[in-house]
Image 1: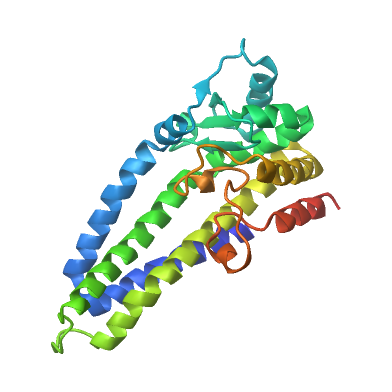
Image 2: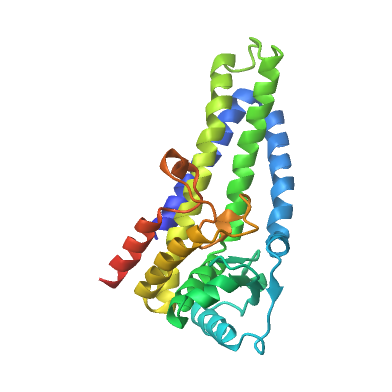
Amino acid sequence: MLNQLKTGLLLGGLTAIVLLFGSFFGKGGLIIAFLFAIAMNVGSYWFSDRLILTMQRAREVSRKEQPELYRIVEDLAHRAEIPMPRVYIVPDPSPNAFATGRNPQHGVVAVTEGILKLLSADELRGVIAHELSHVRNRDILIQTITATLAGAIMFISQIVQFTAMFGGLGGDDDEGNPLILLAMAITAPIAAMIIQMAISRSREYLADQSGARVAGDPNKLADALEKLDAYSRQVPLKNAHSNTSHLFIVNPFSKKGLANLFSTHPPMDERIQRLRGMHA
């Protein structure tokens, strides 16, 4: 419940930035920005599963090919009360997994060859339950809404900065203070990016929590995350891309220091600690 509330507040923050921009820049620019952002993100939402599966060269497998994996996914989908998703294997030695699909009826769960070799059956159950929670919680939709709002902010800020370069921010009585508007154009995209990453991290915490409940043992997911964090650093994902990194259970890109502000994933130590705490 706390993570859901946090997501709502963060989305409200993004909306507030957009509306504040609109009060300075006028309705026309706001509408154009929203239309541009929606056009960019609707396609991503609708075809997200095809895009990442193609990028990762994933192959759909049947029950006959992967009976144990298929049985785990089927059992956990039943426990999560969602339709059976399609199951894919990614031909990559790096241990990782992701879920996608615009709704539970179009769910996809994909695991790498590396994760199948690394984890025990119980640990794999924890990972699959985490991914199915993303499907059940409609995180693809939430991420798309977030990206649309953030995209609108980025688009407006670029217009403002471009206009300022050519002296277009004048003293029209119908406009806000041009210096304040320019300052917002510089700082708002950074704030939007931080909020966007915070929403992504919040959804990861929620998927950990609900996934652990579905699987029935938070410690097994914590064990899996410890292994994945260690081994994924040694064997990086070959086809990792910044636009899809938020979908994976372990961030394919290692970030430290201030870069963590823009990380799509929470600190691994914190995730593991919270899971251990659920069992206490």
